[in-house]
Length: 254
Image (spheres, rainbow, N blue to C red):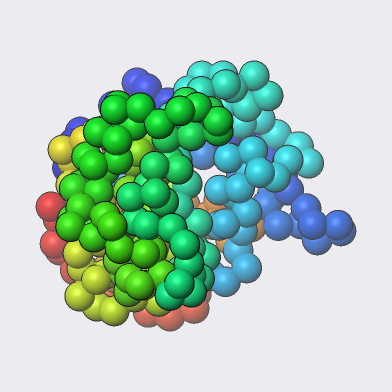
């Protein structure tokens, strides 16, 4: 893995609260994500993990607290092309959906150049590079609906890459895909973090895998329970009660 630069804060969350009506979902969350990090975001169902990501992305407005992106208050932040998001519910295409893999990834260029710009040679180049990074260039002319769930997920990661971001948020990227595709996806994410120096933030329920893959883990249960290395995370026995099952330690660092 690339070394984390603890002097560069990509994301700063300070004392954030969020509620749906009268129901508190996030309580006093303070969390900093550094350049080059690979952070696993874990917690029980309904703990607020996806909500926290949406607050950071500006899709939801916190009731209280501050969000800073690349040093700017989120209200003033303009460089949204630096941040990409791969939501969990991306696998929903019918076989005949009229968009090719290449066209889907080209959409990722809109974040950098705007919705109505003419497609340029640079756009096509970055689309090709992104598809090659996820091993999907040979499928560029296939309809997105013809692909397997794992292949579709890689295409959406390529779409996120096409905007040339500095940080990518991924919400349960391995849900609904088979073991082989999961392993390939994890290998791609390791490469993006190590070789491209991308900061990654991944929500996951696969605790035994997340402790092998990530550099740091943040456990959310409405509030921030811990933010630690995988080794220190697993030493904290009360976390097993929060997560609802036992976890075994596996030493397998990349």
